[in-house]
Amino acid sequence: PFFLLGIIYIVKSPFFLNNGKFLLALIFLAMLPSGFTYEEFSPHRSVWAFSIMSIISSFGIFWFFQVIQKIFSMPIRAGLMCIFVLLLIINFVYFIHIYTVNFPFEKSQSIHYPYKQVALFAWSKHDQFDHIIVDPVYGQSAPVKAVAVHYYLAYYGNYPPAKFQKDLKIEKSGMSFDKFIVREIDWSKDQNLRNTLIIASPWSIPTETIDKNKIIQRFDFYDGQPAFYAIKL
Image 1: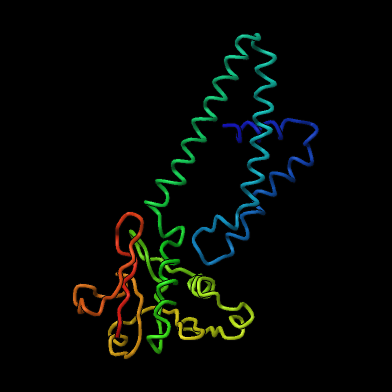
Image 2 (image 1 turned 180 degrees about the horizontal axis):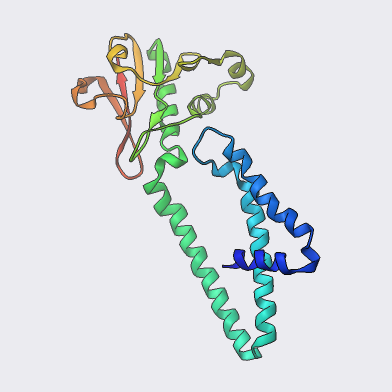
């Protein structure tokens, strides 16, 4: 509600006659970087827009308290202030709970979990295989394609940045550096590979038909669903 009040305040205020329009226009301009990407929505590319929305909301809060100071007596204003502070505290506690408990549990894929564990495991097996193939496709309720898998592999393997930039090969099928290959799994062909470690999601492989002795590790989302299987060939 304060965001809407802020918009009304900016539109009505003579002081913001020109600057206010510019501020409102910035919101739409700030959405362009996210809109130009290939992802459906990219919140981290819209931080600018969220910041502007917070500024506008602050004007709404300012105007709200200006109005109640003119209309209500001191005791009522104090009561409204207490209610406002209480609502802020409740909202903050709710946010912390959602962000630290519900969101990781329900949307592990949105925080790229468990790619850290996948990367560390892959490096622990680095010397045992000729190639390590990592599947970028994963998801809890539906398959999505991760775009930063190669960065996790390089970062958690302490791979020198200069060497990584030099060694990274980008092709239509995927990316590769060192022994690592990041691409989608074609199990009908990949199952015939030898001395290769494949880390793939259940969306990409028929887990029910794979020899269980070949599955050497399972990685789960926070909610217990399988995210990846490590398969030795």
